[in-house]
Amino acid sequence: MPALCTAEGLHELLALLTAQLRPDANLTAEISFLTEVFSENSFNSIIKIHQKLQQHIQQNPSPAVHRAAALSKDITEELQSEPNNSDIRELVHLLAKPHLQAVLSAHDTVACKAFGPMLPPMPDDLQVEDKEESMRIVHLVKNKEPLGATIRKIEHTGAIVVARIMRDGAADRSGLVHIGDELKEVNDIPVEDKTPEEISQILAQCQGSITLKLIPAVKEKDHLNEYRKTFHKVPRRRLKSKVHMRALFDYDPSEDKAIPCREAGLPFRKGDILQVVSQDDSVWWQAKRVGDVNLRTGLIPSKKFQEKRLAYRQKRIALEQEKNSRRPSYDQSCEKAGIQRSFRLSRKCQKTHQNKKKQTKQNESTEYRTYEEVAIYHRHPSDSHRLVVLVGSLGAKINEMRQRLFSENPNRYNVAVPSTTRQKKPHERQGMEYHFVSKPSFEADIQKNRFVEHGAYKDNLYGINVDSIRTMMLKKKMCLVEANPQTIKHLRRSEFKPYVIFVKPFIQEPRANSTPAKTLENDVIKELGEDEYREMFQSAVYIEEKYGHLIDKVLVKGDLQTACNELKAILDNLEREPMWVPSRWVRS
Image 1 (tube, rainbow, N blue to C red):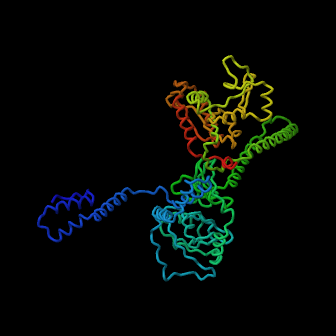
Image 2 (image 1 turned 90 degrees about the vertical axis):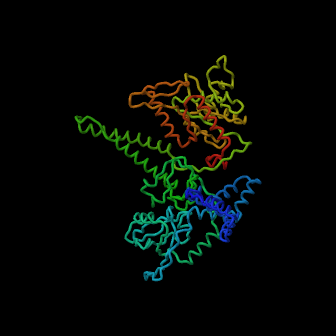
Image 3 (image 1 turned 180 degrees about the horizontal axis):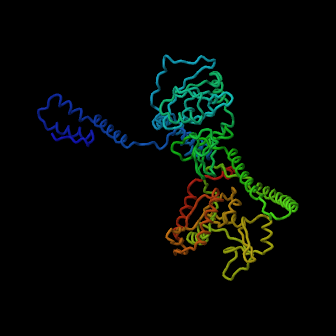
């Protein structure tokens, strides 16, 4: 019999052994029995399953999601708000089946490894302090996820109490930890003399089984009444569907000194979609990042709290600027009386000017970039296409992109025709290159706010009339508008549902060996002077910093044809895929 290689699978080894037994004519009863066992189809199937499982274990797989059951519930809620049709009804019916729910629950148990470790038995000689308050011993199982609860210290008593419970966290799933419970021990470590930060570090380092010793905030009977009140008489606000917010700023909880527990914070970037699951706390919301694999709930600053912080920072900056501007510079050789009088007058005039300036700034800065409530928008085939707004920085030359796209696809795209007061040239046609109007008519439309943007050039007026956009959108084609960045706010209305694309030119930055910056102009590499490079670079940075929260897509323009192909791909995706838009566009 040949030697069996250990690298081969178990099934292959048994098959080889069976082949070696068959040629022997004088089989004993034991060998005959083994031959029959090895030849059984069921036995071979079990061996194959064992081999596949071993391969699967060696690959160390990780689940795509950890909360499939919660995701199913969210999908069901979203589908119920959609227009009713047979496909949606069938999917909702399937998701509600108990067998599917059981499979999803089993999946979550395996994905979260909630089946282990086993909780230790309660010790027989457990010593409970003789106090009036009843002590509760709580065993929790926590893997790599946070505990899902934050704590705070009551200053006048020194007690450490549970401040909040995070939705879907380990503490929330247990149902044994409540807001206001006083924490006495963590894994037999007393916490009375420790700060909340030190206790949070202990909890963060604990893995597997965690034993908490708590003094309940309310009696068990009160908990039961609270449970019945919550689940049998649900307040209306709990019936409201979950709110989705687009973040308009970057947030890192590790750098936030105000957050009650940095480990419980949820970091996010500008543009992320956040699902706010709890607004019970007016300062710290509980939210998830849409698209996250683990769907972890974390703390984020509320809209009101973040706006207050931004207002405070802005006020400090204004005070610092005012303080610097008050420093007098005058000739020390002047007479004292003249100096005092002059300084008092200048201070008075300066204060009046600064108050006006301050009031103007406050009026202009009533909105702070925190969050924008959004919803998924599915374009119905009978609806008009969303307006596409092209915004370009210095050197982008987006007009040539727009014209080429229009000339290559005239049946699919059109452009909003601008208006002007200049004279029509011989080769131009009314309503094609421009709408040629008289200056009084143009100025009358300005007074009626019928222009989304307008300006003057060489004693002639130019602008984009809102009626021109509406006319093009009624033709059931995708309308492209080239606009200045400050125009975006005027176009952000539900009738247009604008999709803003920011186009900036490709720039090869200068190198240390004095190699100049380069760009593409008419598909030809062009060297840029230092001033020209700085202006183009700063133009792109300025637009992204000031208007980035209104921009949906950034396109870096290299050669013209490639840029047009990328733009066409973006527009194709816009036409097919659902998009997050401001919720007021969907409700109106």
